[in-house]
Image (cartoon, rainbow, N blue to C red; front, top):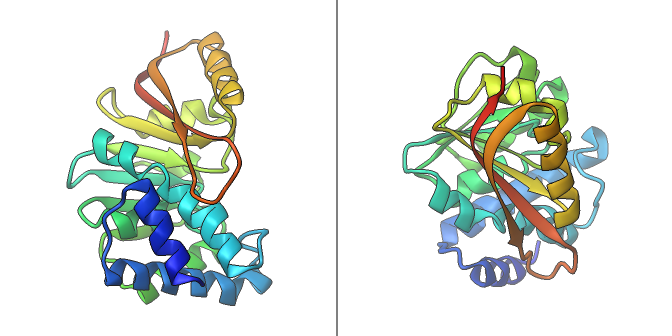
Length: 217
């Protein structure tokens, strides 16, 4: 993995980092490269491609997470998969606690190993289907997961009106369409769609930030 590419990408997003930050991300990408052939964690096979399309893509929402969550917040990454965005954000935000919710055994095993190898003390893996999750979180996030209207019932079970939901999406039009469907199914919420700029990636990215998300009875 190109460490200079990572450092440049973090600087472009405006993320403060240390050598330890870079070491942890490098270790994490190394674990993905090691286990990807057998576990099929991501479709990309080149380390620098993983760095741009997954690591920096996850990191692009760092400013939104910093402004919408507090130190000590417990943040759930729903359907964490290979750990995006939860693992990346946990490395960048050591004063928040991250719960990686992943139902597939081999992926949860990978996540547990990656957490151990990177030495993260603010991160845990919860091997559960979202429908089985009983905890309530200060914030939830998801990337490359289901459309919002497909998981709305499960998400609203694990948040409170004071919680914030931050969902990574692609083009703005698609994100707005998901929110429209959600409203049509009887949900109310305050929503903001933020444009994300991923360094070295010429593709549209957005972040849906939802508060006061409830089901109208």
